[in-house]
Length: 274
Image (cartoon, rainbow, N blue to C red; front, side, top):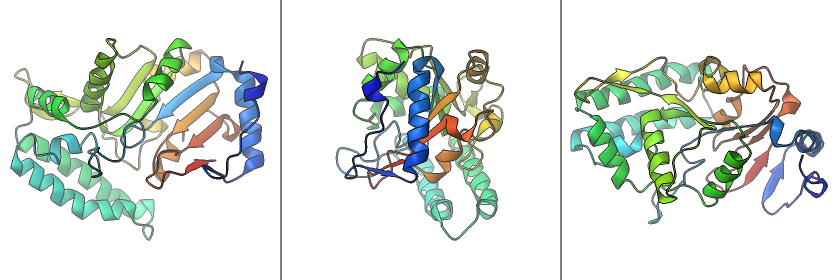
């Protein structure tokens, strides 16, 4: 159980915006009473666990962008990747389109991006080289947070519409700095690549995960979901950087008062608690 002093929501207006303070207070009290034994963490990856900017101040690469935007594989892949981004990103971010209107465009974007990787000869070794030379950085205190979750055996899901192979390689790279390995409490659900015996990319395993279907429909058959169900863990902390990330627990058998949504790492660097 959390300490009594931790059971009261701290209001710091200069850093935090709470849409419904009473609702948050109820959730905070429930989470504090349940403690780590009832806690589950579901986190987006790109720009949530990683920084939004490079050291230079430029926008950082995503797990897709490490391959398609950085020019580390070949110029054709980079050129096509940038063109796809310029075409589809405004649609993804549009406030004038409904999710239903965006959906076919998002499916097309993700499929064309993965087709770009296949047609330009992406291999496992090229992927690892791109990760090794990438400038992607994890956020300050990532280590402390994930060490706390590991010590307390809190099931932690990294849930991303990016690339599982890249995310796992970045995690392994980060943990290697600590002379460790990715702990068993950390699960990754993301787009998993399929390679032939020579290491050449063939396509994706399983169902495509894009920004509009990142919800329980692609989590329910995973070891992560089986664990939280078997252990009867009821309190979910969601971490994200975009509005779509608040839906990551949709479809799980949890009540609204059992979910705290914290898109804390948006570009404006405000903290929103729902």
